Image (cartoon, rainbow over all chains, first blue to last red):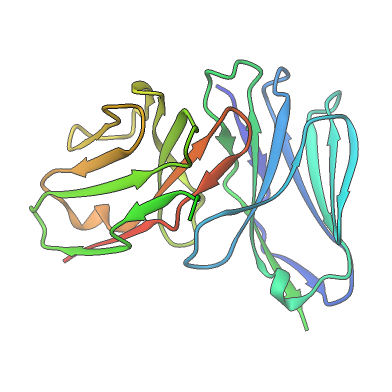
Length: 112
Length: 111
């Protein structure tokens, strides 16, 4: 059973600090990983994707992938109250006929 | 608008009625997903299409749920004999094999 696991939270971070969200996956063959942000009552919005080991930066967001340890993380620098949301991690198995696997999400709360 | 489109956005129905939702994926996306989400929970996988073929259907899905994608473009999700427990947000997503993009969802309320 291919799974993506996330801590459900809530994770509380002071405004201006770095928020660190983590995700582990069971399918060693997974190649592509995605982070989605979901505000309450809204649909998930893709914010980052990463395919290669290492770091990928986009503005205040950095995605990190470690395939040997099978974990993915998302760092949010200079956290803002508007970053308060649920963050979903997802992985695409190597076999592209397989469906994308989603984690259950981590709730992030930025404290003003 | 070239994003994923779902209709209707909201649906209120009486218990026992049938409802049908539509999803129009991003053009050229051959993969289409349906998820269900209740408040405070992550998206729950319902079913997945590649072109017109339904490749996977959740074992948690009762026989009251059926989905189609007859021409490999838009998809419909039908719920027969709705129950109060079916009240949720129904999300559609499409993909070309990499990242998936979600529609705005259809919020179903069964009264």
